[in-house]
Image (cartoon, rainbow, N blue to C red; front, side):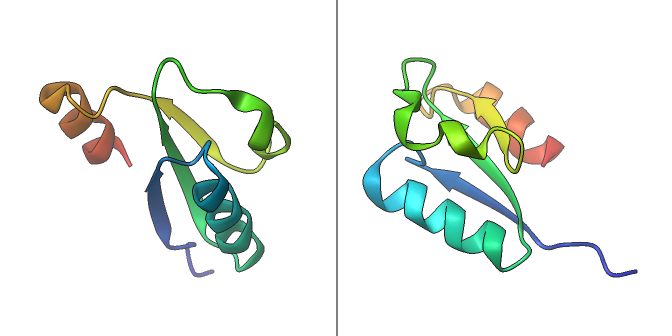
Length: 71
């Protein structure tokens, strides 16, 4: 069985990011949403069961590096 390709998306709670996440999930990708701790969930609330939510400040280089390694 082939593993799904992994994709990390920044800005996923925005208009473009949310649509990109839905499209990639629909194509079988394993999607990781890199979200600000202050993100607004309304555009991506329906993705909770289909994507991996990762809270990370993109300005925190150490945490961002750890999150990306985990992915």
